[in-house]
Amino acid sequence: MKTFKTYLITLGEVILLAGIFLAVAVLHNYVLVPNSGSYGQYLMHNLPLWISIMFAIDAVLLTVYFLIKKSILKDRYVKVSQLCNFSRLKGKDFLISTYVAIAAGLLFICLLKLPFVKTNFPDMQDYINLFMNSDSFILTLLGLAVIGPLFEEIFFRGILFSMMRGKLPFLVALLIQAVIYGYCQPSPSIQVTGFFLAIMYGIMYTKMKTILATIWTAVLLNAFIFTSKQIGLHEVIEGFSPSTLLIIIALCLFVIVSSLVVLGKEDRKLPYVKVIGNLLLWTGLYVVIYYPILFVWNNHIMSIASISNWLGENNVLGFIFFDTISLAVFYLVMRLIHKKSLIVECNFSAIPPRAGIVMGILGAAMGVWVQCFFKIPYFADNFPQFQQLFDYLTTASLPVFIAFLILHSMYKEVYFRALIYNVLRPAFSVPMSIIVTGIIYGGLFFNWDIPLTIYASAGALIFGLLFEWYRSIWAPIINEIILFGTYFVMKKLQLTFSAGIVIAMVASSVVIIYTMYWLWKRREIDQKNANSAHVQAAVQSAVSL
Image (cartoon, rainbow, N blue to C red; front, side):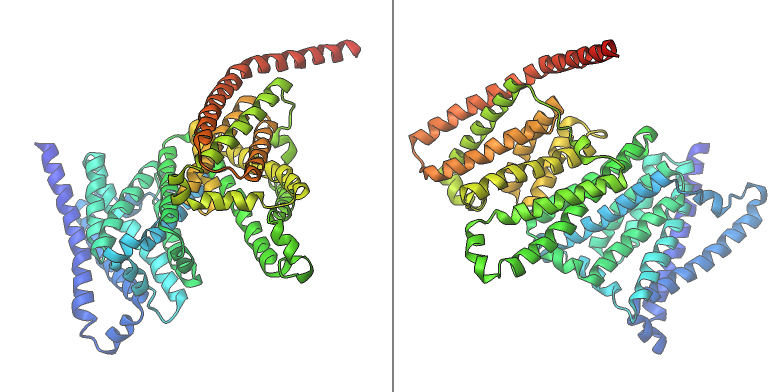
């Protein structure tokens, strides 16, 4: 009975405080502003200031409420600062909060640009445009990225959620504060968004044990959304295909969910922080290098009349140019930031000759299978981007193609295995590391075209397993060189769909399965032999000394 009475008192106080908040919103927004002449007209053109004034009124009334409560409860009164817990935000938690904020902001922007959302929920885009309505962008940031988040997090998480969390079951408290927060948002679509944000903020507040975590996340999230709108990022994202937007949304959800999971596991925070930080570093470097080089290549180098025809006949020269610069930059960044050698991180250790030969056979079988698969009329007609890709990559003279084959294979494996896969592996399982590597591969190389991303993920599966099994970058490099070499040969053969294509597909499937099985079984023997060789070398070195 006492517990039920406690529940009722707690919920009653929560309803009273939420009622004060809503009453201020109704009176200010629907009575004071529309009927106050120049004051209301000014606020109509400065929505961030409107919100700030409303929250200031709320803050004054809540202060009065808690002063009255303090005079009544005396020694039993709990200060607002105790409810909110303004303890310092730790470095690892600060970084995780930053990752969550950026991922949530990017997810929201991509969600806005989905055709289904744009058509059926226009109020989501109207919400951004409405609150960007201000005489000054600085005023927008101050109102929506500082004052707004500060008040909302202290009120909804620090006060309401903390009150309920101490008296009600955690899940009940989490859901009630999310419902209240969502209901207080300005439109139905934003109410749904607010509900899920409140769930996220509630979990973060509970696990990090400081309101500064959610304040920082909300500040950065809002600043990211409105700043990206100001600089034109929203328009750039609007040009992405729906499939690209969905993949970005999925990646953002992965970052958010995995961040929330890691928060409860202190021993996993540091590896996770390093993983996400390094992913941002290496993918960011790719973007920073690729797009300027693409611009220079297409607009300056390709326009040189004396060599433009030759360059057009050797498309892959652009990759050679890009790969050379990128590898040099990656080497320098690894030295400057991580104080490590990129060559050591790649691990160019020797591979047993027999295993290397089998990897080559596997690459040839993969090349035959892929080329035959896309000769099937259904796939050739419905997924022409594959044939366009193969034509582009294999249009070159033999010497240029060989140079491209070696350098580009090394570049891709250094980047995706030594830099991306090696970053993921300490914090995630082999399957998860391989899947994420494949998605990043598809995103960076194929603009997240879904069929090409699936193709990239399938390749990443085999390359990743070879790298994992043999712990040498030579394993996937050998496989990839032979794979793309097979593409080149198959193109010269000018094959068309026939019974022979089907037979070749079946035969290559058998070879792929058998060679992968052989390499998996053989890895243990090769590792034992390698360890024995290291021991013998150490013994001989000791004897010679």
